[in-house]
Image 1 (cartoon, rainbow, N blue to C red):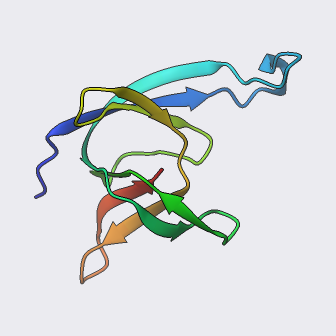
Image 2 (image 1 turned 120 degrees about the vertical axis):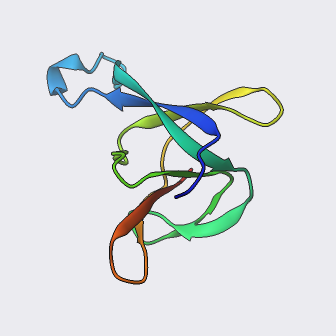
Length: 107
């Protein structure tokens, strides 16, 4: 069992096309605060289109968490600064017998 000392708020984005304002902004929807582990290190990852991009923060959520690419994640960094990021990649990590263990989100 992994220890999740941090908390992150997942901000769901509305999927209704009628909610988009004239400037193309999508309003925030429901929020959900989840336990997680935050790792603020830079690494190169592949995004949803297969292109290599730099991720500066990784979130490790319990396997039951749901974080689609369309949502945003708000968290407090180690320096106490509140940041808001969009996921670059989302991957379900499994143990050696194939059971889901963690949800890894790179932002």
